[in-house]
Image 1 (cartoon, helix red, strand yellow):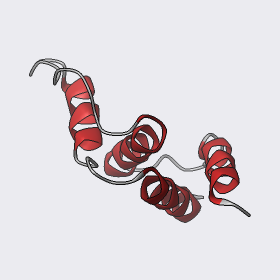
Image 2 (cartoon, helix red, strand yellow):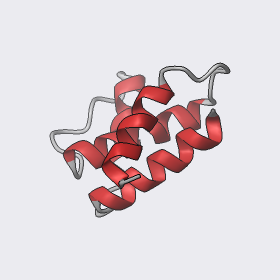
Image 3 (cartoon, one colour):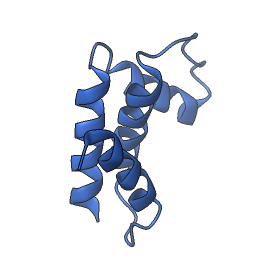
Length: 83
């Protein structure tokens, strides 16, 4: 199966994970998905009182420079591990 198809399937599979992943895993899923679909993080870092948005932004920014293909593969592997 080609990587794009695996990524799309992993995206669907992520909605059917039966046990709730840890916060770290959820942030990593978010960051890898955003990196794979949009590239490096853009915009201003959210303020210090918006904890959730700031954590998501920081996780995504932590993936800066990772190629679309590498991010897709890492996302597929993560979702596969969590299933």
